[in-house]
Image 1: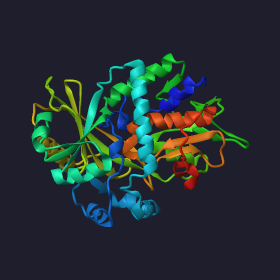
Image 2: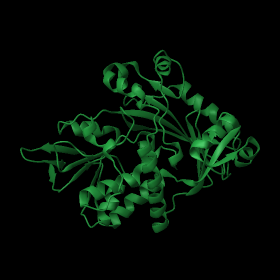
Image 3: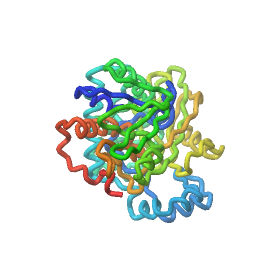
Image 4: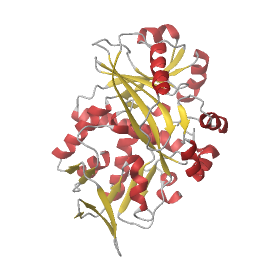
Length: 380
């Protein structure tokens, strides 16, 4: 939606086709809400971890044997070093995106439960200290962590980073886009019509005229791209969310990423705490077994103290490319089609900068002045 925002700001007419309903769900709603450039790396995967996962080992990182067999080329590329990387260009974009988030929030002051400061929590103070040399930030010991609501031995505080309620942000953004003049089609399915000279999009049998089309359907984007003869190596990585009612108690003072566990914690306002985890490449499978839910529940009980009552669970499918970098730009062979996907765990963090880059390319805007060739769709 941020691409629509920046296109509208540049004077373009915009039509948004959203196959989802009015409620914000999936990866857009059931994410941690953290905007954290210091934690841009995807979960580190080794051959040993892949083997453990395939043999039933219970951990936050899981792979379906069937998905691996069907996508051998994807995993072969990923295991070359793609998974677990934190490319410099992604870090740079994340920092620029944080600035754009803050600019947007300052401009409109929406009620999104904005909270300043994000903790990167590690298994020991020594490990935190070693990471501090790379990422900067303030070292936090176990006593101070207890005061902040966490039971842990070491962390780094990044005061410049922020957290929001993603459901509130998406709802506000959708409303703002309508106010700015965007036409929004909710619950509609887009089809690509690949004509002899140029491709277009139709919705409910009606052709949608346009000078440019942006495909940004998350993990479902590859299906749309196939209609254009473009193969996009993006697979869904499922994440799981447990939302707790705190009964009005401020359980934690800042959001946190438990880097060694792959768990994020954030409190939205006085009553809602969200715990997010898992990186599961199991296709579009929505069934979570009991052990996974119990594992995350135990992590919450181990590292937090406070009144928590489970009120809701949810999941989302994060779009992950084989090299773990976003896919951003013009689709090869189609001058009027653009793609934006592959952000994996960084969808919210990178949303504004992605929208800004696309809008600049489509409307001949100023751009970022950054070499983005590493993210080009033509690399595949």
